[in-house]
Length: 609
Image (tube, rainbow, N blue to C red):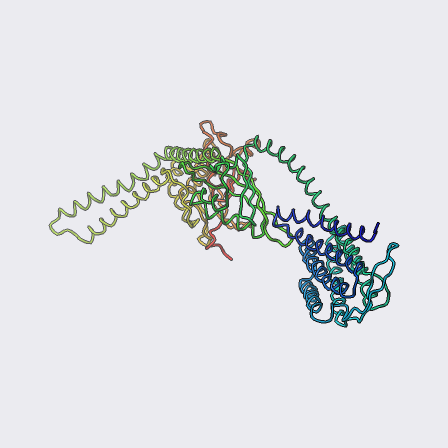
């Protein structure tokens, strides 16, 4: 029985077995390039074991020299793929150093075929038998090739590269990988380096056994890859269990799952997700297919949200409409995140989608209802102001009638005074415009308007409302004061809606003075720029104030402290102010009465720097 043949054959078989396993993994999953490189290293180790056995069994110096020459080809397949494996698998090692290692090994291979019988010997003179495991094997005696220094330099550079990789992986906190892969490779390379120096320069007479060191190197790499495969299998089992649980939860919540693979531009989606987007089950999907389902008006926004998440934000959240082939419009809420590799490259997106069409319809119905309530509030206020407005309109109409009668009298004269007639006509025009302005303000407040957001001068806003309600204030014997500086910056909002809020607050202030025995019956309107860089408008009265238990609830819908109130005005006012990005609140004045305040954001172009 030849122990040498058995051991070297087993070493080659073990290397080939590991190579075949990892080659199969690469064949099934072409992105597993580290497994392919490991397979090439293992094949190189097996080939060198065959060359070593051929050298030990050589009958002539020429056979030995030829086996050693082809052994350098096997070593090239060990070293170069090994460098690539370390770069890909451990994501470490300087790239320039990796190229230098590969380049010097390729140079050594070329010199192996160009100078001498091989890289190590210019000439193999004789074969000398030595004992290994109790049986004779052949070793060479000959003239050393001085160019074998290139191979030694290559091995030294490989050791430096492996040390660089190991230190980097250790500093990353992956201590086990640093020891098992980097440390093991360095150890076996040191053993092989020492053996080649001693044998090929003639310091010791012993057979070449580098394949045993290569086997240890391959075993360390294979152990780590096998451990990763087992870990992946365990993870896959856990994922299947988690997927089953998640499917139950997702099905109960009617959520659709989707996963986008950026590398292959493919999308996996659950049945619920496909049903939401109206895709058939076997249909293959890409992101472009999904975008075609998105409503044209929302498509650009969806692309922008996904691009921002992929560029580094990591998370995305968006609502958008689908325009299905049947013509149906469906609202979708989509949430998810992006996964990146160690280099920051986006690998895949995962997310969930939910049908929110019913919710959106409810929001639209609520919005329409709020508009109707606001309109009803404006009509109600107009009803309260009707008599005062009629009185205000009757004044310019009466003046127009009197001026017209006076003009008729002047025209009956033989030589009418034209200057006087022109003055009467100017008065008629002015009274007509005044009556028209009153009617226009009333008509604007009665219109059902959506928000028409524009820059608004606060002074003009307050003045319009004060002019509208001034006649009612006189009828109620209420003094109405407005203190608004013309230098205030503009706000951004809907003039009619903001007028409605201010009108509600002023009328409420006058209502609070009904039945009051106070000598001072007054409503004050003021505005200023507050610390939050917002314009704050305050409406205060000199009434009895708001009861402490009612103060937190005054803005609640259908809550009122008036005997004949509906509890709508303040609730609508809060909705309007919040829709403008502001806030509204109430407080009691320590001097007596109540103060209602609301703050509005400044118009960006008019905001002071």
